[in-house]
Image 1 (cartoon, rainbow, N blue to C red):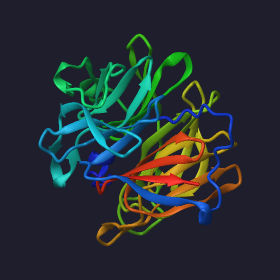
Image 2 (cartoon, rainbow, N blue to C red; image 1 turned 90 degrees about the horizontal axis):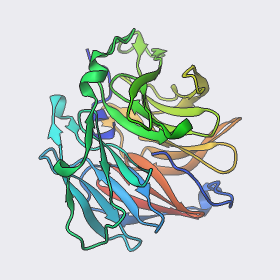
Image 3 (tube, rainbow, N blue to C red; image 1 turned 45 degrees about the horizontal axis):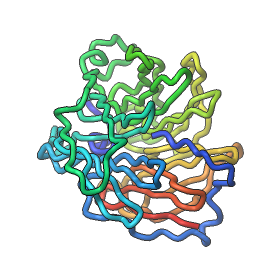
Length: 333
């Protein structure tokens, strides 16, 4: 039986901070959260470019209408690539685009069914005709991962998020196989690490709960991986794992709830995104958070977000947060 979250199809980029300023989010009372863009179709992944534009991976509505959209600083949406797979599968789950990452002069895109697309969008300007997904180079890794003999085999794959690691290789979270997949710069694929589950801390559901890997970052020495626990989605039990460069996995910090993204900050620590708290009717509205993570624990930076999916920083005092409600919110301080 599949005990993963029912929204993983629509949920499931590394943030590299380049300024030397202190990027730590300050006290909650000094932060402003305001609408930036709306009317998006299942926004999952966010990325920024050097001009300060925000790029969005829209999973679509299930009618093969997934797309990559550029949001200019005025909040206007400009379609860049259209026609990505977007379908409704079992239990009404949306299967579409996931996360995106600028690297090596191209935009890497994780699409439905564990496909990796590459797009040269360097010359795109607002108002240009969008590219078509069918014309992009693509690497279809679904069968490779399904054929791999995992010790605890979920017989599933869902490439979800990615970061650059040593030697310019891509390290990708697989939210279906509960693994980290490595793609070398020359295009060789392998299974890098397995993310272990936990003993179910509740009397409801299976005795063992899957730790579904979501976000991933590399701090120059180790990887950090955020996780979202499967059914019954226990509160306060999700973990951030760390991995060394050989793929050895250990616990970095615990005490989290339904994490869907992790980002590095210039001061020691990270920011993570809590999607929400699971209740009788699913994930409760407005229970999403951005949390600071430090060596001595975590604390709330932004509260009352509605089903957030990703976080990206565009300057020293501005972040953007996407949400499954079709919005991107601006966070300033």
